[in-house]
Image (cartoon, rainbow, N blue to C red; front, side, top):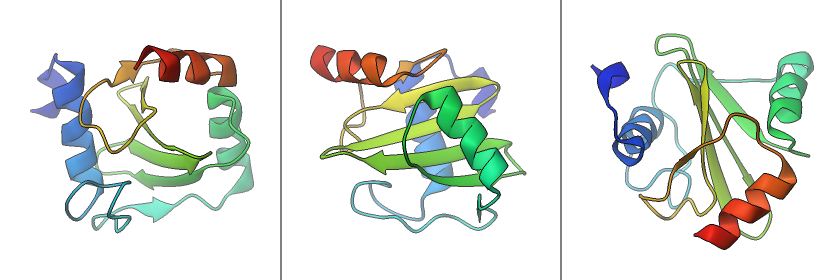
Length: 117
């Protein structure tokens, strides 16, 4: 079961596989699997954007997995998940490693994480 995965890179890549239909989702594929609905409710989007300190985000939700999948572009692609009450981020979404659990995402933290990678 996915909730028992301890390695953050393996967990997040499993979440990516659940989210995207093929290949390296959020890098060369943006087609989501069945069950994901785009979050168009502005209050929900605003809540996620504020929590992650983002100006914009493409955001989807899958109630079967209680999984939020989001991404945004600012020259590089950043892939975000909210799963099991935790936030995960990869600031270079073409990579399958270097995932970070981030309790509160801010633009400063995102830039710092990018410098660490």
